[in-house]
Image 1 (cartoon, rainbow, N blue to C red):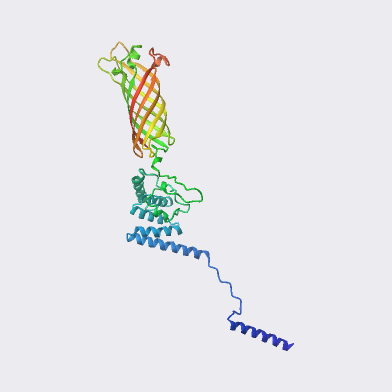
Image 2 (cartoon, helix red, strand yellow):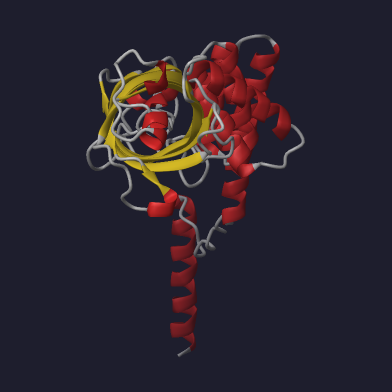
Length: 374
């Protein structure tokens, strides 16, 4: 038995020596420690910081084109909003307004209270005004910023820097989208929604004189009789529901012409509410055809020139139709020329609703207005 043990020990010693001579390990290798995930994250942060430092160094040297290339790489690896701000400044310096607007908006969306936010808002407003014709809310989330605050198109944005977002297709799994929130055609006076104000001047031509209606029922007046012509100044308020439909209300002061031989002085209130349709004559909506139907009301006071008659108040409901042309000088300003036609039957308030012995009289009105979108 002892010889057997000595033989086994000798065999094991020889086997160990053979393994050592062959260069094989004599003990099983220990498991290599795995690198912790935070180290990988730190490496990524160090990479984005390096790109950011490189970009800012190039900016300091006046190399904005090179800085944009470095910033594109940094933004792909980092959510730091200041990178978007710096890239926006580079695009602005190079005369690329659309990507500069996008980057400034992305920065202000994430950092609305940053120490330099007010200055960035001013630069953004200036870019929007000069490029788009108006200034929108500075904290709107731009259409090509993803949920993490990074760019949806990366360095491709630099290659398309001179093109508006309306012409930049957004890549995705489905069909491309070309809708642009900054399209100037979406203004209140074009195809957008909102309120507008219009100071209005109108020249009214009536078929008969309200003074004759009140004081001499049945009398007729000639076309050129000054008592059948009236000037009106007023204000219109309009709300647009979208590209083609609006409602409006207008009111103004109306004064009829008179001479020394006229029997009375007539003045009062003219008003109208209506529904308007707009039809663009150009893709930009700079020129539009306007058509409207409404119901007007006239409140007139007839003040006789002699003691033989006393003052009389008249009223009239006036169904009206309108056609016109609107031309926009800017995104929120323009002028409008239109023509109204309608008919009315004046009545004394004491005998409402039917009092006049005269038949229905016609109205033709020529209107000129300035239009401002609020």
